[in-house]
Image (tube, rainbow, N blue to C red; front, top):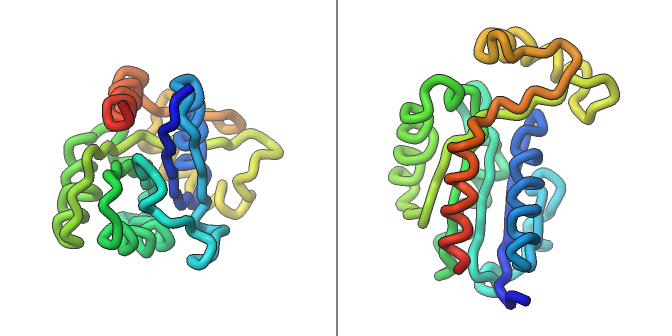
Length: 182
């Protein structure tokens, strides 16, 4: 059994980031890595554990309307206070057709402005749950429906789960995590 510990801190608007977090958690569980998950939208700053207690930190953020989720942006400030290596991922629609643009605009430039240097980073295509009874409220479904329909094209499902991730790209991201924790 591994004695490695990973913290995953994330903020999501429409649930995509949580889908990714769940898959990362499963991957780390298979590697027998202890994983602590913090939903930054629901966690007060005082309840965030000491970052130095971890071997790796993974920060996930949704990007909507060209902006990072607010709570994820705030969490980034904590990274300057730790020596723990960290990686970043963003879930955004831009990654569907313009992954390089998403990397540059939402990660590389963003990290440079904040003087942060992640060990690894990745833009990830969204997973949107339009199924009846999903956690995505009707108001949010209505707000993003046309945008998702435009970017997802033939993958759009009116009442379904749309996992728009590129499997090869996502598996490459998981491999980066595995190398970072090895």
